[in-house]
Structures are given as C-alpha cells and as structure tokens.
Image (cartoon, rainbow, N blue to C red; front, side):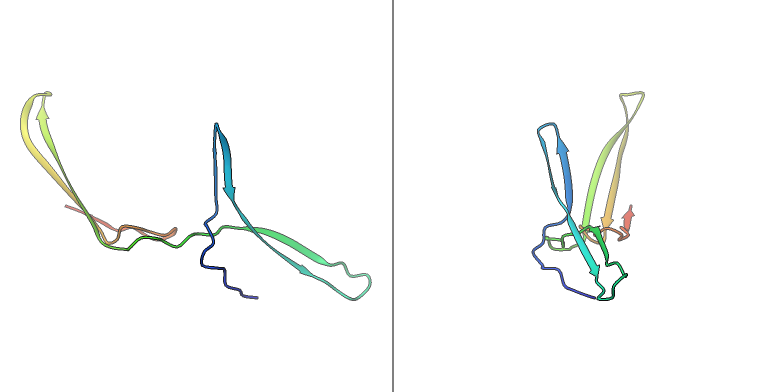
Length: 102
C-alpha cells in the first residue's frame, strides 16, 4: 500500500518547558480481518515522524571572521582570518554537510 501525505502537514515535534508542553505526532494503523472463524484479526498502530520540507531558498553560504592574536594578553601578534564555505545553507536529516575552511 502506498499513499501520498498532504503537502501542508506540519512536522512532528515535542516541546516542554516550565509553563507547559506542546506536541504534534502522527500514527498510522492497519488491520487485517478474516471472514473465517477461529482466525483472529490482526491490528497494529505505529508512530511515524513527519519532516517538513524546507521553506527557504537553498543557496551557497560563506562566512568570514577575523580575530586579533596577542601574546601574554597584550602583545599584538597580528590577526588571523577564517573563511568557511558551505555548499548550501540548509540541510535535511541524514544529509552530509561539506564545509571548506581557508
């Protein structure tokens, strides 16, 4: 059996804090029935996790950062620069994120 989930389903989540809790969860159930006497019906329910699709444009991401280097807390040793380049700015569970640092 195969079926398509609606595109607008919110993703599964569970959140608790001191003020309360909120969650969205989904279950799928199945039942096999028999017309023959002496054969019990089979029934099961399984919780499933729904992941929402990304809602932002996927694009490459690059960040630069500079830091002053000092020796003995006050002797200037120059600056250091780090540039990190990601192939995209958003990932789905199970994907590998590749970053190039220079």
